Image (cartoon, rainbow, N blue to C red; front, side):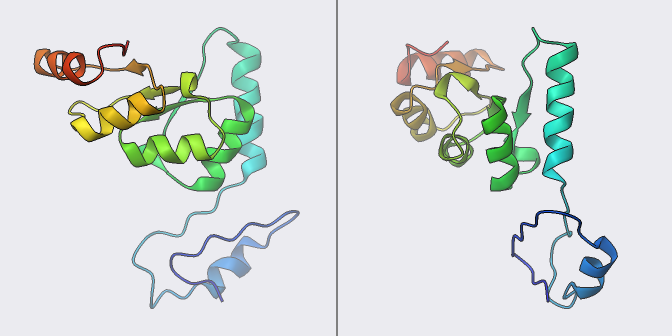
Length: 142
């Protein structure tokens, strides 16, 4: 029986209809997500083959599943992180600090400090106020 909040990993062929039938819908509060990591890997490699000078950056906020983030880190993808926790997840998955962009329109000072500690240099800026805040808390940032 599959339960809400569980992450199950399988190798080989998986009977998706069987998985869906076994899901305990009484306890589910969120959608059931099924991801074929081999397809993810294949699509990433296709991207790199056809656009080798364009590095893809995965927006962690879209789906912060640790298995997906790890697969992409292993492939050498970049990461668009909007918080301290997303930066931490990407780093724990094996991403390099230079492969992470801190992209949040309103970065809390404590998150800027964490980015500084982890040497996350790249950042996006949406407002003049954000430029001053970054300069105050992390002037070495790019």
